[in-house]
Image (cartoon, rainbow, N blue to C red; front, side):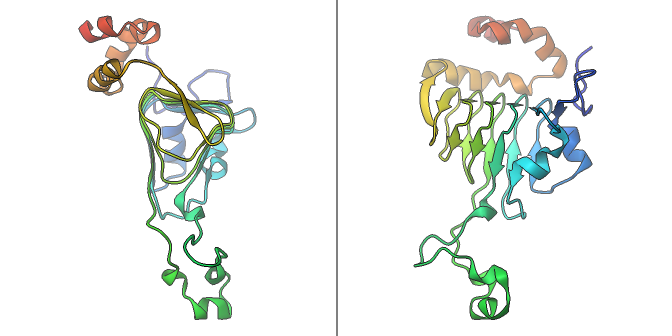
Length: 212
């Protein structure tokens, strides 16, 4: 029997790990989507993920997380509503405090740069306390190191670490990455993924290509 992606706690007797999709169903957010089997682990309360770990979410941009992603304790996303004006003399957000300040410059007239969505592909592993800044895209199969700060897009199947996060290495040669993206095993039916687990874990790309 495969784990049910609709069950909040996939590990019996282990309250520190939750599947994010059913957690999102409990606290719907129209600008967030999460794929099946992506999970978050937390030493305290994983159910607070969307309140505590998705910051500055006022609905001005989207957060998309794919399937089979693993988010370690403290993984945090800062969304684009955190941004201030960058092109003026002052970055101070005067209008949000209302009164005369907002009359002088209505909030709607703040010259903010276009807000970009944050997109995470499939099968991405986020290390302990990793931080993702607004508007980045992280490719499928990427690994983000512990306490890394992702401020720029990361390509598929890379390993990134540091602040700001830099690519440490590629997990596979470019031609293999292209093949893996074409195979897109995360789109397979759940029962086929279950049968393919030994190949997925051992890294035999040729055998995965021939798997039916």
